[in-house]
Length: 318
Image (cartoon, rainbow, N blue to C red; front, top):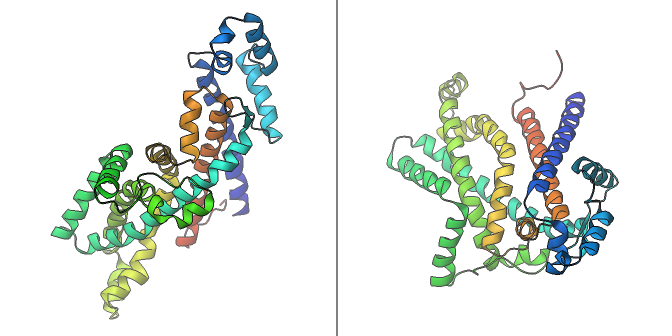
């Protein structure tokens, strides 16, 4: 297992490095000029100021030299400086990343708590009204764009019913955990599409497992239906869900970006949205690094979860 972890961490580092190269190239290919975006229209009227800015921050060098300069700073723990917010990118991430982690964590936890029993129930009640009803809702929520779902929830539960707030908590981390009226809609919006996806996979996994020999053996020994489902079928059925959980982390993070914009929630997604509007390259690159690390970490956790849930899986060389 140790050798597997070392190999995977090395692969993860290469993936993150490749992602930074591609992102750096794409950002430099965006039309516009960073110096003009920072200095304003006055910079265009003063070529000397533009030249001094580009020379100071290395924008007068080829993109490859710029990338190596940025990578060298990154290896020393320096993610760069945001000109638009006048602070380091590390400080920005320290302020906004914990709020996104809370939002994504709560939404994922809610999705698992709701989706696993629903998928199990659908499998038991397969091809019946309950199964068809939940299947229809799953397709509906999975197909609906996140911004549309969030807007509908705001109109129904905030504007019309006045049950919850129309935007996310604007305070510190403590408000995210205590101000449930403002936190409810962002968490539910992000969780709905994940619930739909997890429930469908859970249903399929349970249907595959209830026809296995070990289930028939347990029933032949007199085990009740409840015991068979919760003690035998559930654990094996969670294996594909665990894999899906790790691989779905990028999609959940992307959904958080849109959700935070809809609910004015000051997390990483909202920070990325503002940075993209202002061509704040260091902040955008910092966001990409966080997402890339989350993706490879999710994949690694999925592999580890496989070994925990299925004793037959062993990550050793033959």
